[in-house]
Amino acid sequence: MINSADSNYNTPLTMVPAGASDPVTWNIKYLNNTSQGGDFAYAFRSHKQYGAWNQPGSEYMIDSVNADTPAKGVNEVILTANPSETGSNSFSDGSVVPEGTETAASNALNSFINHFSWWNASGVKFGSELQTNNQYTPSYKPVSVEQGKTATTDPTFTNKIGEVITTPDGTHFAGTEATPTWSKIDPSTGRVTLTPTTSTTPGAYNIPVTITYADGSKQNANVPVVVTKGTQTVIWNNDNATVVTISRANANAHETSDNSQVISASGMITSVQSYSIDQNHQIATTPTTITNYTADWENTPNTVVETATAAGKNIANNVIDITIDGKTDKTNPFDIDAKGAGAKTLAEPIDILAGSDLTSSQFKALVQNNIPDSEIQSTAWQTKPVQDQGGVIRITFNDKDAQGQNTYLDINIPASSINVTTEEKDSEKYHITYPHLNVERPDSGQNTGSVNPTIPADMPNDEVSNYRIGTFTAPTGVTVDVDQTTGKVTETVDSNAQLGSFNVPVVVTFKDGSSKIVNVPASVTGMDHEHNTYYGDQTMTSFTAPVASVHKTSVDFTPSVNDSAISTIKFYSDWNGTGNSASDYKKITTYKLSTDSFA
Image (cartoon, rainbow, N blue to C red):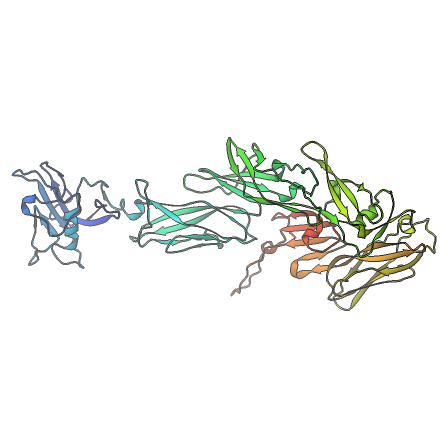
């Protein structure tokens, strides 16, 4: 029993009708429902002798009766009047109680008579216990997304018995003040779209979502997100996310002949970090470092090539099996760039004394080498050239193959690049060199610089008969000349000159008729403001800083320098002598600046 017939109180009573999914609330002024027993007792139905009700009820309630006894139980209800509805709000033991001339039941009364039962499977609740936000559990799958890319995740709803259901009608989704600007939430579907920029800090984030149901009740959900960079892999577990970071540079890979270089799988991994996830689906933003793990290649990378090339070998789709606490997972596939070395195409052959050992100047003249010198143990003729035939230069490396032997790379030198002599020519006897020639690009007008050749002390003064510029295309805005008698090289740089380094080939012809090409290492130095890059003496330095978001304001406001501070500096060195892109430098040093040490 609820209240009394003369009560002035209103008691909301809520239940989910049998066979339905949404709750219904009736406003009760008075309810008396007792039973004398019988099939489906306590259902709020008249005895079946009164005939079928004028609207069909729940399929589970349609045969509800009280026992066929004189008492037949009590079934009385008075609903609080709703001004927007017509019809009676009162029912007493099988009949609508007339209110004035009204004999038909209101829609609310019909609904109550056909669906109310104390035995309803969902139970009968008072107040807000059966509001929509108490019927479902919303959730989002965790998601990882790389800087500069896009990922999406959709909501899932489950009912009280764990069944996945469709999104309830009329549900609205929105973010909060804590929702990052790089995440967007579809208000109708709840789909979360993540678009972190390249300036977004890698790590764990919680994306809050507010869910509002048609009845006005609300719930909160959370999207655990890990933003990654480059070669990071996220392994999602029930209670944590493990982030494996790989450095492709750690491979120190290079082309080899016959036997592959051994690349350590564990050596590729720079860190393994775990972010815990709690029962509320919240991911910790501070990770724990994992050191106890094993790493093995799914398929061992192979650095062997049939023909050595300066372009190197791309070893694609490498995967590492990483085992933590007995559970093995795989990293995302990644590429390994094995640096290479190959024979140059020479416009003019160089003189080589038959049977002589390979000199460093001959190696530089004949081979385009992109492999760092620190990885090379030695260079030598594997097959010494003879007249009208080429030769093979072998680069022997410091690392070992699987048999414990030093790896090597054989480079075939074509006969067109070699002039084999039977006696030592002046071009081989005397090693002329040039110092670096660097000229700063001016803001206007021209800048000029020059260098003289370095002559060996034992070379007679009149041994060189001529100097001239070899086959060569100067960079835009640069003019290079050589004094044919003294060998002095002059570089003239305009204000629109292309920045970067280049080699000037000077053909030195000796009195005995032999000749050789001597490269002058030249550079146009200066700052490329458009690309935040400084070009120096065969070096390149790039600066990375986030783009600060600013807008007009009504009051004076000065953005913080921290918002656009330089975060990364990369220094490129050990130039390969060809171009001026990042790949043309054999060594890259990266400096990461912390938030309290900015430039």
